[in-house]
Length: 262
Image (tube, rainbow, N blue to C red; front, side, top):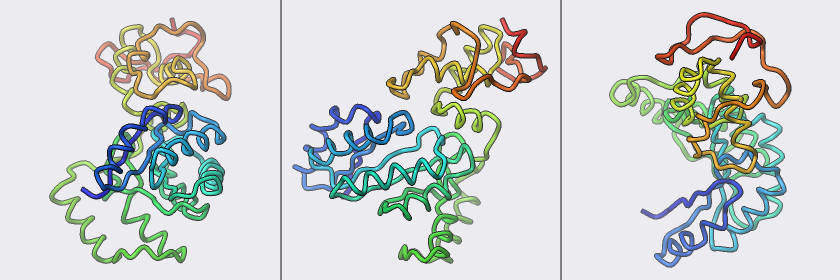
């Protein structure tokens, strides 16, 4: 193992110091990773990344853990990071809003030298950036990756046949997760909470996002069960008025209006 990634929530880079130093002292390359990076303003991400660089990280990667970024968000953050850091900058995308490849291309155009991807997009939620598509897009955009297009397509087909039974797909839950900025790991506890309180499942995701607050780590899954204290709203205003209601078994069935929710 030549490269070790040391990750923290996007506002908690100080927790990575001893781990980064341990990796470097072992003679390995250390990359710092800032997860749930959409939860921090650009200036804060730069501050946290500078901490990782000072600890010895030879690169810093920001993760769009909830698949929430728009292209302009990525461009702004990557550009600021590349201007502030002396080490490599990278981007890790998720495809909740169907923008993982576009966001990865934007990251490269803004100066990123590390971009993550997986064969067939295999990964959490709606999946990661689909590697074979990303390689093709970068090639078309004039970026040399050193990856043989035909061989990676063959690897993709082989993975689909022998390794990946169900390739990730974008479902309504993933879209809502991306809009709400909630990590897909919240899906099960939010489904349970929605069933327990008899409330709208998608609306509960927005409520869970509000409960986290902008400074809370994405892994606080227990917050998903907190009872909502007020009307469920997205950050941009009221939710769409028609939603699926979660039954006790967590499935989505009949519709009801938001105004009729308990």
